[in-house]
Image 1: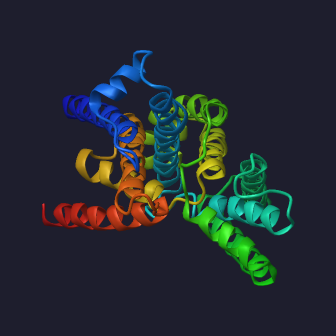
Image 2: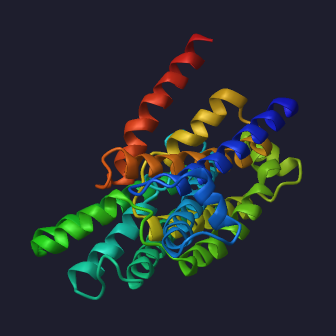
Length: 331
């Protein structure tokens, strides 16, 4: 299994690199390979440098960070809650972020292109995290994972109702902007935005990867894990908080992108098993490659028009997952 995991890791790392290069080369304006290479080596025309360095490369890197972060957080949520349906949608994080963004748009505090919009979405996600955690702790100080999951579902439903109320009272242009944001997009990001997302995502992902052994023990049973030296309650709280932060950062800057946190960890698990020492890093790489390629498809399928990336992740991810699931059942 270790050899298979290493081979799969190398393949996924190369796939992620290839996805970045393809994303940089292709789009509404086609660039030849030598033109992209010239820009990356410090040359190229001003137009090509702007397209590659200011538009496409930041967008590709955002896809890596958000896709990898969502997939990794989904894998952690599924391990923590011992539920294959657990992901940022189910736990209310995406709903909280969407509610924050929609409210700021409806009040005229931000525009769809404003840098304040990710801040409002991130604040909404933090409110959702606090509510879910608070409800779960108030019901059971030991942080029962079943209560945590139910709390997430209830909080998510509450924020969905809030979004529906806001949109029903908002102007048509606000409704359009809000819906487009909720469908997800990697466009418009700058290097400053990349730095912010990386600051939240990368250290948190390293911390989650370091919890792989504890998650393996907890998958056997909390009593067994405690007997073998794992601080079960501490692991649960830390894993939930850090994974939620990763998901919140991704949703805040890219919108509500579905299926990445659900489908990607399942695909990796079906192919390579449930050892979190392998599952977690490979989920990050697979999510990074998947979302970057999905963004590329969103830009080139109907170019120069752009399809919301959430549509692409659903259209591509769901059939792929069903094929993997069918294969696993037949094996």
